[in-house]
Image 1: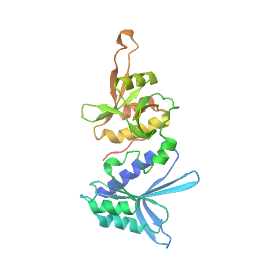
Image 2: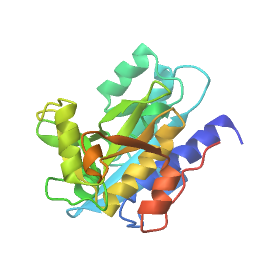
Image 3: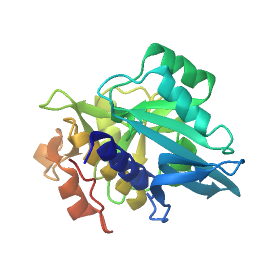
Image 4: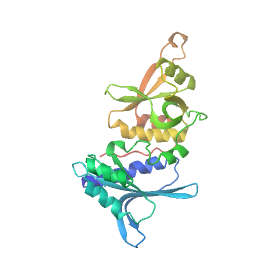
Length: 262
């Protein structure tokens, strides 16, 4: 399979997982034909749509793996072929980034540029969707875990707090109780304006596991921090590193999809 076809399938899979955090059956299509207002057909690599509050949201994604940063001509071509296709959010994903002029063309024409490393982020593309179904608020209860998440302008951003691991990357932190999370929060001297404690219901935990699968290939991980019930041991945290596979097997109640890797 050609590199760009692998990228297209990977993008389709990642967004399918992210958009179906509650198993709602949103279809993310690959190699889709879009009909514009003139009746002309245009191919897009990945396409999905969903309805929210009575409004249909459509997103078209172009995937590029040319072995070099994408130039302005490719961005303009992508924007141009969908200019008469209605209200469609246009996204381009490149493995090797973008040239300066390509970024300027994209900004002028409202094309969102992403790199392959940005795929699993709960970014602006699906922020509204994610916030409605997968980001916990201060009322959610851990099933079974609690965690620490980033706050931006008073709202959870979708990013998780992490601590250094042996690969010089980060392990996202999990706790069996709010009390343990609060104690860890104090010991780390975290700023409550930038971080908060959240319970992880099963649908949030599912999204976390999907994200973790992607990040594990880049050296990131997850660790459970807990305090021993023994009185003599209650003054310290124990750390237990755990893979997404084991976390899913032991703590997720549904059938856990697996993000395929080449």
